[in-house]
Length: 168
Image 1 (cartoon, one colour):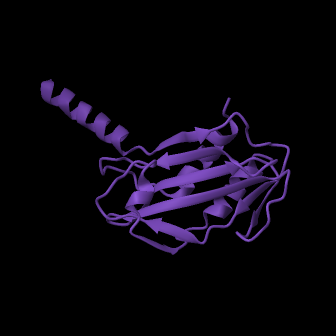
Image 2 (spheres, one colour):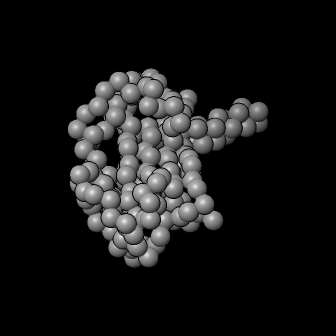
Image 3 (cartoon, helix red, strand yellow):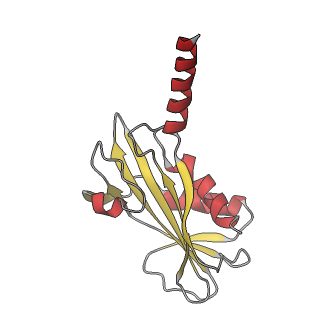
């Protein structure tokens, strides 16, 4: 009986340990205006962290060892999720000038390799439609102990957009 309980406890621990967390990293009193357009700024660079290092999303920039061309089209996933929710959205280039009244959305992805590549952290930033200041940051955080479920943008974007638009 004790062996069975130990096995059940171990399986439960492993299941929850592999789970990627989605959290609101920072926010202000202002929220994205869901009546305004969402302009998703294309990011053509992914960040890479070393194998075997599992930093917290707050400190991950310190662990970046190199930048490389975008690994996946995360802007398209964000666009799909926003339009699925009935919001007006489009993808713009980095050089696009800030248009007052539009929600700007940027993101940064951080990747590592295990047996295959996985996205350890994804951060999505929302900027005020009136003054362009950052008002919200949501992030997915891979497990910090090395156990993970090979997180990728498809698994994470939907939950992060949900968190971003439902904050009270």
